[in-house]
Length: 213
Image (cartoon, rainbow, N blue to C red):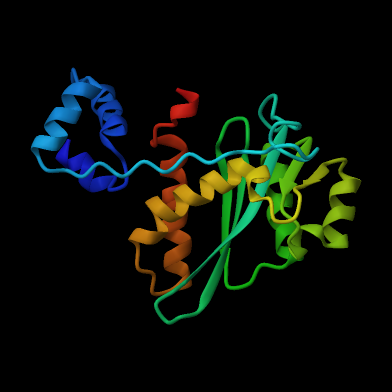
């Protein structure tokens, strides 16, 4: 339990108990919680509940994913290396499977880099029916919209100032920052790229997903 808590510093006793059961231990959540507190391990604070008003046609309620490749969502995350230089991450998530399909890392990501990243995914994963985003210039650019239209992939733009309408990718971004970015010091862009891809694999294949059971 202690080794898992050290490896996954932002996981609470519930997720740790899931790992222990997968490894063959008779570890009920109540038993793990008792041992967790006895060992002085800190349970991460619960986040406050937030009201969700998904009323726009592009929202998570109106366009709920019905299967894999039905609705993808994408967004940018920004951070800095130790020299103070900014890097950006283009995150793409399948809203039905909750899988992170890619995280592209570069100093700058324009609408053309967005098209290149999506083209690689379309070739390897097939075409989604919809792709959801905010109204950032890289997503609303004419080149991106015309390219998606030619492939019959419908863009879904959320209402300006309403990030909760892009809830799946926003939730993923929070996990990315909390469980990975906030716990790492990056000296070079290459280091960011390598470690990010390793974390993405761990997120998709190891990390328990409570909503999916």
